[in-house]
Amino acid sequence: MKRAFAFLALIALALLVADPAFAQEAAAEAGNQFKDYGIFAAGLGIALAAFGGAMSQGRTASAALEGIARNPGSADKMFVPMVLGLVLIESLVIYALVVEILILFS
Image (cartoon, rainbow, N blue to C red; front, side, top):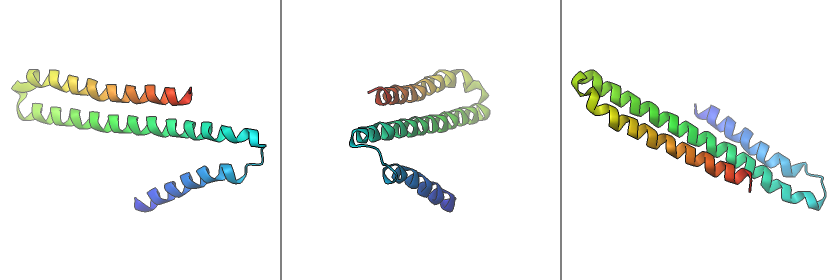
């Protein structure tokens, strides 16, 4: 797992460094580099937000189902807090999406 992560990090670093290394455009094109990094940052940001949201939603559902399995009578009392937690988790992912859209169109 560590070797795969190190390999992916090396590939990502090579992709980030390759753009300036092969740049042969005029100086007027230099401002476009920040837009490219903004697109990369937006993609990475929304990917991390979606990953974190999915992981926490999975853990929330797992904990709720485990609690219901141990005490089936508490299903009604656990449902509303679980749904509220899922809504709050999803709202963080939506906020990340809004920030990424602002990064892309600024």
